[in-house]
Image 1 (cartoon, helix red, strand yellow):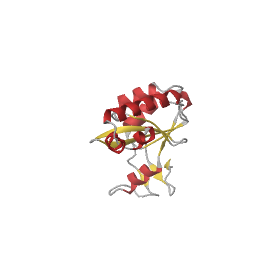
Image 2 (cartoon, rainbow, N blue to C red; image 1 turned 120 degrees about the vertical axis):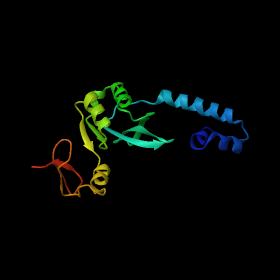
Image 3 (cartoon, helix red, strand yellow; image 1 turned 30 degrees about the horizontal axis):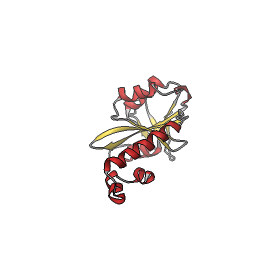
Image 4 (cartoon, one colour; image 1 turned 180 degrees about the vertical axis):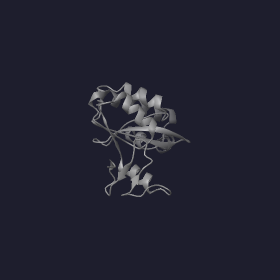
Length: 162
């Protein structure tokens, strides 16, 4: 029943087992608390930052890319909230690479709190950004990039134009 309460809504588990929904919720919370005591959080070497549109608003989602695990889902994607979260990361100097989209508040938060980390724009966002109507096409120079002209290569890597 504990396992079912992790995989299905409380009302569903209650209906299947004949228990009260509050009882199912209490069993879930007790098991989650127990598991939480055994979970060991490690600051990732490669951090992923993206957003998720959930319940009619954008939220920041942080992941450990190497381990393919969720670190946290923040209530908002505002720069001050992301900066505060990154400031509280234990051993934040261990973060070597941050993969994210091109949204400037994420970039500013990472530069302020994780200056040692290399920022990498993930391929999905590069391709989507440069194949949108009115945008540069891969292999062409984007002369409007905020940090100067950039060439979009065939593999999706962004490099400075010469």
